[in-house]
Length: 312
Image (cartoon, rainbow, N blue to C red):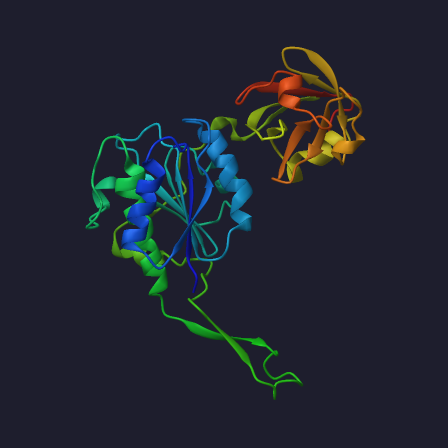
């Protein structure tokens, strides 16, 4: 089994913080690779962290452990929460970072890990850097637990008892698959008295508002190209907006908004809305920064008016 760590923080690269987290992980679990999602999240921006987790989790490999540290409450009594999506584990502070994932995977097990229930040898209660002193040792311990799970053999080619079953059967080795009532961390959490919960902190702005023909949302992220990712998941909002007739974007100014399926459909100085590859609708221009063109900033509220009210 090739377990991997993935890191998501707002630490940046000017300080030694990322290297220190990786150093702890490499010391305690040296057999596993470590990858960065990003460390350039806007400082303290919990909503942006939640968006990155939600847009990335489906592309991570099985038996991965993701550590998200965007933690304005570091040093307080806030808990750590651990979410298990099939065989993928996500650790984050209980401050709203899991809002979008919990909305999309409401049945995925979540465990509450209180600081006083971390008797691990390498955890240290500090006031300013739980990423290194709590999250990294915990993630390493969880990874080692997953590695020690009992295994089963699966025949992947050919199908058992098929007409080709006389051929050599290619076997793969796996830990046990989770069930509806359990997860790959059930034994670990029970052994360490970490309780299962659904009552986690949720960001109120994680759900867009619809009032008659006005959609109100906010800027989740602005990417390198200046595309403005909105708090509007494609699968929930694209049809409503594409069926909404003429669109008007309200920010500091009022502009027409065109629903398109490709950037190239937009003329020069035209603003469009498109299904983004990260799973959320985004405002875009053709080969220029939409964020700069209409002066939008991270976290800013916007409204989109539809000429045809959406069907409820």
